[in-house]
Picture 1 (cartoon, protein in one colour):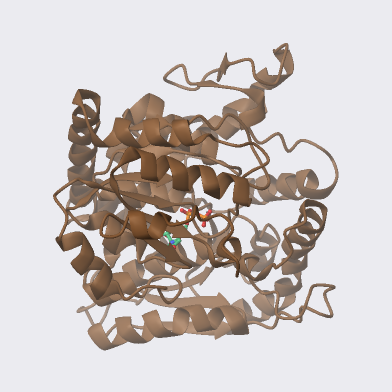
Picture 2 (cartoon, rainbow, N blue to C red):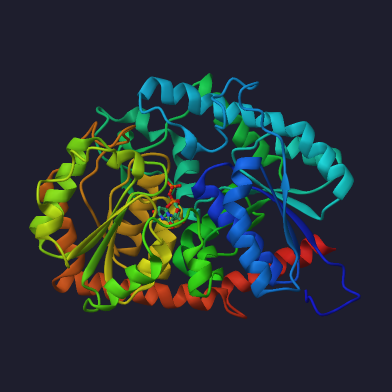
Length: 485
Ligand code: UDP
């Protein structure tokens, strides 16, 4: 479809992201992408989350004055819903106590069904062509059905992890092993992928989160399909497998992060950076190509001091240049995690960002040579698009699946040695020796060069996928055609 054809029906797509940075960021990218291809995008969110979107949307509108993108705000009365005041985003949870966190997380997920009535009314009055709602909003399928609006699901993850999760659910191989750390091959999944019980999400219980995830799966079956942030060349076997056995109505349109083209757009992703972006790039300019390791664990994971101390010591011992992002919550006031004198000793070599980093800008800089990541899907894909070898350090959710894609399929990364899901990083400590060894492995030596070569090739494929005639470009075309008619 084309935006310059006045007679063409302009597709109106409503996007509804789950309220967490890892979901809001790619959804905004997706809404911008749809706009740039002639559609009109509306993003639904809550009052406090709308503040995250306002600035980047304003910027996008300034850069593209003819494109139509807007925010629509839904009410989310936290206190009435039994949540702490202002708790409109996973990032706003303050408690670090595991039990309290589990309780509030489940309550938060369940509370989102409060949106259902508002969504029904909104769809009834706006009559969009389709709704792309987050997987964590299972009630959205029924709400959309009422006004006969097709509901699409956005998982925020790639084909590989969706397929791995499907095969494990279907065969339950974890029930046939002697111990939780005994490796097994995921049945049916192409590639003989090896995993252990303690690395998978075993949400089959009938209560709490397990029941919620069952609702999620059921709503997906009844939906009009799924939109995937991935590109075909990254995981062809798994894209095929998914469409053959799991859901034939799937469209891959990624990597979404590459819709942000200029410095400003990249700098505006997510929160306001805790470092001057231009200074950060200037610092990188002073380093040799592929000589800096970037370490970040996304927007949710948090650490105990014991673990931060090991990372600090491992980085220092590796002797390499680094940019290390320590979340504000982790850093704390006293900074007991920072070895005495480390910042002075590594001056000029290392940069610690306390808070939020302009991740995409850093990853894309030629001085950045490796990425230590928790394997959140956005980070993995941003690392892929930047052509970087990775040190994989999964913590929870579907991150262990993403790790297997990187280490066993793409062979562009090495594991730091994280062997199981943890709630707080530090319940299971990765040693400084492991950190040092893994960082060296992706930066220097023949193996590193091989990984880099493969990673750079993959980045070229990522670029080609979103260009006119590329696999993601074409899949989005198919999507636009189908939902315009
Ligand atoms: N991110 C960022 N700066 C930070 C931390 C995170 O820009 O300091 C962005 C990152 O680029 C990615 C998203 O936040 O787009 C995190 O998503 P991901 O799926 O990697 O992990 P999650 O936060 O959901 O665990």
